[in-house]
Amino acid sequence: MNQHLYLIGVDGGGTGTRVVLANAEGQELAQGTAGPSGLALGVERAWDAILAASAQACERAGIAADWPRFVFGCGLAGVNNRDWLAAFRAKAPALAGLAIESDAYSTLLGAHGGEPGVIVALGTGSVAAVLDRDGQSRMVAGYGYPSADEAGGAWLGLRAIVHAQQALDGRVPADELSQALIDHVGATDRGGLVVWLCDANQTAYASLAPVVVAHREHPFAARLLREAGQEIGKMIAALDPSGALPVALCGGLGKPLSEYVPAPYRERLRAPLSDSAHGALQMARREAAQIGGA
Image (cartoon, rainbow, N blue to C red; front, top):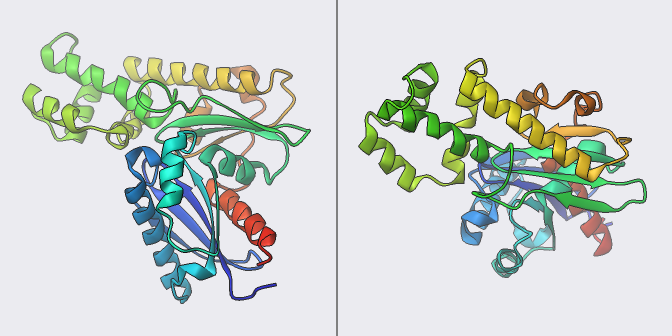
């Protein structure tokens, strides 16, 4: 066993990056955070965020960020795009090892401890995955912003801002929700909102999701949240038609959206055992074992 190797598990999404640093035995030493590292935002930006978060974790653990001594396990949004994945690999620094999977897979490993189960990951985007009793993994949804990622933060924000647009125009009455949305984007009039919309990316739209959740009693927000729950139910049904496996809702929107999941699926919900970063740490440990490092 190479005691000089370190492991890093990376949870990289469109809103932020979380990493877990561990020694060769998998003992957690520190965590770090940085900006987004979803591949849709660019591979250079992704590596900048991953290495910044990793350097922060190393500093907290008192370890030199000497990357050739590190095995990285990365669970990333956007790896289903083969071109982005190839570019990400090409930009990698010199490392002892690198394992890359979708953030759905790393979330699945973390949520059920490597045991069979279903996850629906609800962050900036959304994706669902299953690990069945035969050890096979399958994924649904997660096709990406703006056309998909149902029930994710950007999906909610993209729809919520319509209420602010209509309120500014007088097409619907101005109310607390429309004002909260307008305040959040820093607009004071139609022109200001247009400027925000022209610059907005998936991260910006996802930042509106907490506003929707905070106004869950508002009819417009309530309808959006119920629709999100229906979409979550469709993902679960597609992955586990038998209805036999436990289901974990993961990510920042997992808990607030759980109450909107249709009853037959809600009864199967379980709290995730751990998160995507810890699932990615399992990937790093497997990779280290394959290269003889742990």
